[in-house]
Image (tube, helix red, strand yellow):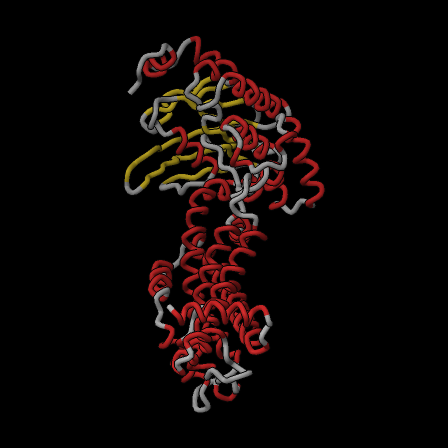
Amino acid sequence: MNDLWNGIQQAIWLTLTLDADLVEISLRSLRVTLSALFVSCLIALPLAAILAVRRFKYRRLIISTLNALMGLPPVVVGLLVYILLSRSGPFGVLGLLFTTHAMVIAQVIIITPLITSIAHQSLRELWSEYHDLLISMNTSKWQRIKTLLWDGRRALMTASLAGFGRAIGEVGAIMIVGGNIDHATRVLTTAISLETSKGDFALALALGFVLITLALAVNFTTHWLGRTEREGRW
Amino acid sequence: MFPMTACDLSVKVRQKHIIGPINLTINEGGITVLMGPNGAGKTTLLKALHGIIRLSNGQVTFATPAKTAQEQQSFVFQSPIMLRRSVLENLAYPLMINGQDKQIAMELARTWAAKIGLSAHMDRPATFLSGGEKQKIALARALITSPKLLFLDEPTASLDGAATVEIEALLNEAQSTGSTIIMSTHNIGQARRMASSVLFIKDGQIDAHSAANAFFDTPPTQAAQKFISGDIVL
């Protein structure tokens, strides 16, 4: 209980004094996660729309695989990315291991199936609602996909936020591929893990509170900007 | 575009025979009303003629190439399908997908919104309007491209008298400005008011096809006679 109270006090203190390390780590956490989210959304949202609109061979297999990959163990992803990016791996020449780029790659692999699956579920329902109308209007496949992505944007925002939540709280994979290097690849989750292992529970808790606050702030801001849950909106 | 000819048209859904074989010619102008008991195949025939369900046999041909003919048709569904957009955006949608300039499309949409008495609701989400208002939007959205052929599936099925009068007025105007209309209805009064010819469908086949006056004055088949006189036709 004492640790918890100390953690809260320290979190408030670190935040109010804009502790340089905390700010650096928090901004890096946000940068890595938002970069991963951006890349994931570029892949996942169109893919979800294509899976909703088009009928092709192996479509069901892809959907089942994506659903299964939602529970992908981050440590395994980290290990795979580590092997691929390590000096002896196929992409070793790029020199990405132990950089924030490697962390972004790992996070993209982890959250893309999650965002795709959730987005696909929403877009599939929207497509069943729109199907007859869009077919009767003689729309092209691209126009159908564009229409679904635009009209389903609020549901897609929820899918993206689920991806953000998973990414910002991720520790296993980014610890492996990032290496938790101070002033280089340390982010909130890896810092929490380090402080816990050092026995500094108060600081670990403080960082935890900052992480939660950050995640909530991004969610609230997105909902506010997206104007969800307001009268006359979907 | 006309005549539209259906030759040996049949539709099966999951191996179940729904309609056909149907041979039919529709010439330019007028309002052809499809009548018949529930499950007779009216909706399926409309969708098959419009080309939004797969034919198991036969074909529908036009005097113009299929693509051109498809672009000159519109369909209004029994339950109006509203895009999750504003009234104005719903109305402008068919113009936008046909490559119309946004400003011109919006201007035309405003004109139609005024015409159907929804000027005050132009910026409201279309899905939040009443059934009658939605059906008016669906009809205006179908008419905004000035289709040469308009299909309507029981457009006034769940509407009250006032809304029905408004829809019928719009349909009469569309017909007088050059649209050929094919619509299904259960409403014998509406068929008498609007039809120039009647197609009576029973068990997936055309039971009778004649000019409206002749159909109502001297019903050509026993089933048609029973239907008009209000008896139950199975």
